[in-house]
Length: 104
Length: 118
Image 1 (cartoon, helix red, strand yellow):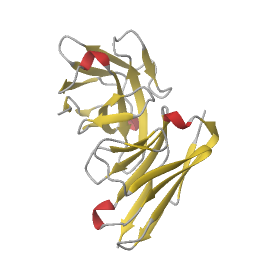
Image 2: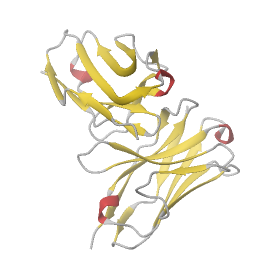
Image 3: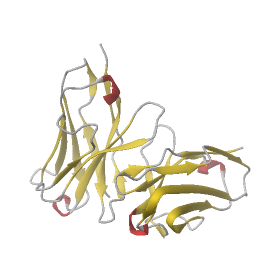
Image 4: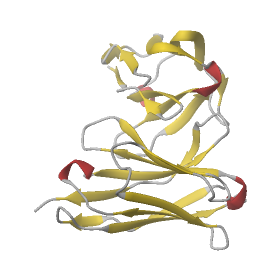
């Protein structure tokens, strides 16, 4: 069973900065099945990235994904207050525990 | 516009049953696999179940296997999840979602809360 570990648990940054979120798999996985979601309080998750690096429809280019094997990264540039959310990675039917991003 | 409208959910005692439904619109429902994902209060996402576009293939997390049943009615564009033998640890918001070939979920419903408590 694959386990996805996200780090850090919480990330606090300022507007305009860049966020780097990590998702590490317990064994090598296919990039084709790696996705990232954004979830704001009281809302359903929203697909940001699929196939490790492809942006979903309507997602601005400030969101980018990269990685392969066991290490994957979601990068969010030019942070804005509305980027405050929990970010989840997913491979197949496994989710990471989430990273909470706070923009102060 | 893709829409997934939930119904069902609510409060139930341990051992009880509930049925969740998700009405799909804005896309050709019969050509997409679908999934259920849940989120316990204050916790992360947990995949629960999936069903192929035709309904012939179903998949379950070990935590719900034998207790939950996923189904779909392509003539009514509806996805369902029958929850039986409910436990306190099944308390969560349940989301239906459209599943793509890479198993990512590109559209999600708003979620419905299931509370299991005595």
